[in-house]
Length: 293
Image (cartoon, rainbow, N blue to C red; front, top):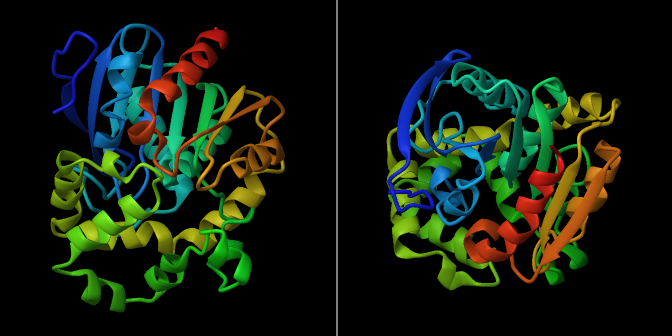
């Protein structure tokens, strides 16, 4: 369950958009902001941040295509298609303009959303993500720098292999998800049992792991999409957030290639900022969203 600042449960719904069906949560009032989670998470990732936003914002928290309680279609897991899912959802909910906050894969999708729907998106928060086509692939290599720096993203190559990951992960969803959540954080205790249970529930459902892997397997397509999109820089303000123990300042460096107006902030945390340091994140994000007005 997710609550707003009054400790009232958020509203939930489903919407048929862009050839699939998305599950979403929404709460609050005021200018809209949509929160896009990464992998292996769901919209539940934002549970601590939502009540900090709802006093001033209408918050929309979708489960991305194929993830959470959204439908698991056969295809469409590239970031352009997944960003169009969100644009269609926000239009269906009646939000003409809105801010976007994404983390991990949700930030990659958020970048494409801001780029493809420039008349709709008025601010972008890009948290803890590497963009395919702009350095993400470099961290898949078995190099001393990647290994000693904790940035050897070994799982990308594993996930790309067809069929074998599905076979090995089946029945071990809890072990994989718990390992990923705890090793990528500098505050592993913030991967609380309720969150782990929720993520395991969703990724263990039929098609859950297939959909997760499909997001990664679209990465070379994403890389070309990002290179094409980056030819025209974003004009909206961008806030790039990093965890010092994971992607850190590289979030801001990437976004400076993608946008004209970029502010960066690095937290004493690992990869999952909204679960590790939600109070600190809110203190940075709320003034940024207020300034866009």
